[in-house]
Length: 595
Image (cartoon, rainbow, N blue to C red; front, side, top):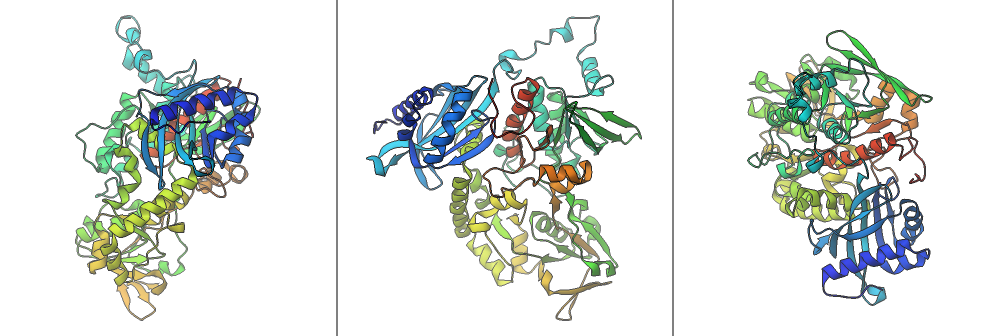
């Protein structure tokens, strides 16, 4: 039984000792006193080879022993190189939080345990949350630090190819196919390719854009990131300490180019992924790539990683009367700059981040702008409200913050975001009241969970206010409801009231289609049906088909913010390496066997 010590380091260390003893014992009953009845265990590959969350002590006691017998975890101890055990407030609950490390039969990992008193058991300290996360595979450690390449072959063999020669040969793929083909060269593609590079897995990124970073560079003129620089580092190469808090799009795009060069990533620009099929017998893909020089290349990689973003295909709503409009119509993905619309009139349909930013850009360029709202939208000021979700990144190192972010089970993450949303409503009250007065329809997410869960469930439906909401509230940008539009006419939008809102430009800031539609387009309906929904939670507690094996062997998905891609690329890369090393089966099974 865990003593009720006042020394939090001793309390955490004692819990880990008893936890390891209980896992090693054939008597599973020894685990029971260690977990609070209302407890959560999240495992990220370390014990189960899956990304999964188990709620409540009785369920943990059913799941954990079986996984532990297969994975053989041991050597649990506080990690002296990470944040020391401390008292924290997480999801409205005060707990002792400790970062620990451990080993299994095949790897090494880190975890976090949070201890709280159990009022039903004389306030003894028990685990409220437990994270066990795989960090590296034994024998396949990342090639960095003291294991970095020595570079002697590049500089001391005067008769052979130098570093540049070898880089060119590696990137050409003249006489080989990559083990992994990554489709998409944004933050998701770069992060997973960099992780695989460090694990010695031959990886090629393909992107249809002409230049690395164009997926950011070609977006609208005024765009900057909406979260702060300390959250957004790519793996291995943090941004310089003198970079701005909010990174401009072109600066980020140029960094992507530098990153590819510095990390020695193989990257084909001007290359369209035309789709493919999977050969079950060979365990390989048959892939067709079309290059802008007119050539076609067929490849047979063992893995395809789709890194094309949370949403791929622009959503163009069926508005039959829109064909009547005589002016210019474009999707927000095609919008670049408002300069050409100075002195003209624009309707922006859609009130998410893109719709607001484009409306503000057009207004700043001298256009007369009307914002058209299709459905209720969550509005929060970019500072401080929108940054509340990243509070952990102000507490310590990036590595600790990433682990804390990984450790929160869905139930508690929702609880945290309800609290954050309530706080943001208080902070933003003057703005929200002003918007309500002009008829803007507000919401605060399902169950009041805020913008983060809107993003995780639907990829949008919110706006971080950097000034546009103030323009709407003041009337500088007009607001209309889509339901007030009767039809579109050559001059613009005719309202049910009889008024015509004149326009020269209509921008459809109407979001994107779900990723499964891109899968259908590239791989066919049968494979899309086999894979199922991508992103969102459904009835589960993890994002569907993200960062982990899918029902289609060899097909992987990675998407999300820079932070999500940095964190989860590590776990995706470890799974691919484990498959390549024969440690993990390709097929998804209920339980993967540890060797």
